Length: 84
Image (cartoon, rainbow, N blue to C red; front, side):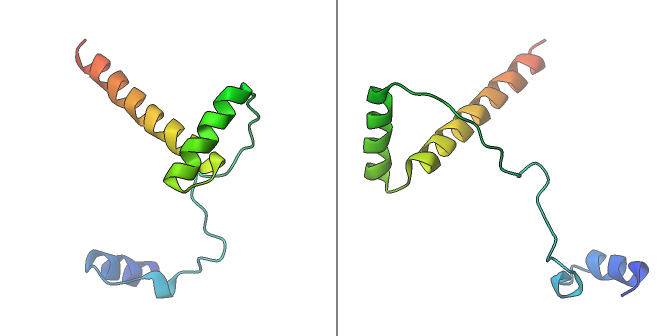
């Protein structure tokens, strides 16, 4: 499909995924990067308890909590910039 026809189909709201090769597609910024963090044993035990309660792995819970906290920090940062 030529680019012009592709653009027209996109503008018309047509489904275009059948025309794309997604075998090498990736989300920019979503690449995993390994980070080692040491926690006191009491904290690991608490994390594990909460992870079991919620039904997720320790790693998933930590990532979820960090994502929530970073989203909150971003809202606060945007609010402080808007007040200036």
